[in-house]
Length: 525
Ligand SMILES: NC(=O)c1ccc[n+]([C@@H]2O[C@H](COP(=O)([O-])OP(=O)(O)OC[C@H]3O[C@@H](n4cnc5c(N)ncnc54)[C@H](O)[C@@H]3O)[C@@H](O)[C@H]2O)c1
Ligand SMILES: O=C(O)CC[C@@H](O)C(=O)O
Image (cartoon, rainbow, N blue to C red):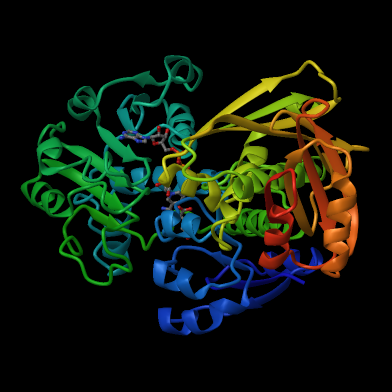
């Protein structure tokens, strides 16, 4: 039974879903990195929010880990390249808390417009300062969105309901989408001087870090109010403080900070500054959504191989998974065969799906081929890290699809560019389930690639089969299956034998010494 650790505070529904799906679960929150390192080796899955930091050091101790699930959107607390290299799928829940976070941005916009936190503190302190708190209306004001993805577009919708004019800077926003969500797409330099309110909704990347730098903040309209419910690091906090103090910025509300938890900060106590402790996603509804979603996704992966919302692996729905499973087994076996037979560096690998195989999601098939191929050289390769490792080794991966059927109703062919030229192997599924090799380097040969095998290339000549049978018999090796193919009568022939024991070096030497043998080697599947 797979076992998951929930290491951050999460709705109890997550644990309930895991148990219902046959996954054992421990909820242990608040561990230090060293404490987490001591226990992480026991788990197949790790469910987190933002407190747990999944570093390369933690991953090095996570010897059984297969999946990390983030109950939320941002995965900046997970080292994704390190997880990919370790073969661990990283998934998030991209929509479950979007509405809640958009609502928090709108709430902070109101808080700034009417100075609600300060008015509240003053009133409850018995001051009744009616003349101190003069606000601004939102109606008719221009809202500048930086980032118009899931959350930004919900903010735009709500702001339009408040009769605001919404302009957006987002290099990846298409003109059609801008029209659909009713925003005017602008450049950042146009947004800064026009917006009465600016709200940020981008991830923190090399391009967005400090997007509201001192220089850009200086270009904003005097009296602008700024909201950040996305990520700390998007705004230069020191420059913001200066502009709040000078009155150029009329108000700023931050839910997120460069360093979190932010228990002390130069901005704290600044007039017209509002702070919340990363509460964007903190509603009952959002927490139920993300907890249910993360548990379902992780259980799908651990129990049936379905992959949803993974950031480092192609998606594979729980419905697709059973259909793709035999194809992935075939792809992995063919990849392994190529890896075992090919010598030297392979600069290119082409994966050709024909007939029924061409109608399927190719990404998992490609990952399985690469995993089979690369696992020959390393036991730690899996479908998650194989594409990453192939890229690292400079292997070009090509995909070809032909929906028309050839000799078989479904076929996967793998061709590799080797020093000796282009070589290919092909396989099909018998009864839509059982992987079978059908072609090996241009020779038709049908074989089940399983267990210990002996591969022989020989001259097609009378008496050869008898000689090889005798050689194996004398070595005490029992033959399980026997598959033959030849290029032409009297020409090059191949023989694939499955045997009950590992094929030893002595046996290979004995076979190679037989008359007519061109090459012989052991294979393992
Ligand atoms: N405060 C919270 O608790 C909370 C909750 C949920 C999400 N978030 C954060 O909110 C942010 C947005 O989430 P989302 O779900 O809308 O993400 P999203 O991926 O749907 O949208 C992000 C948008 O940013 C745009 N973008 C990327 N680079 C850009 C750039 N250089 N300039 C301008 N725009 C750029 C993208 O094109 C995309 O449209 C994320 O950082 C997420 O982690 C915070
Ligand atoms: O889990 C949280 O409370 C914050 C989540 C938020 O930052 C996110 O990116 O989804």
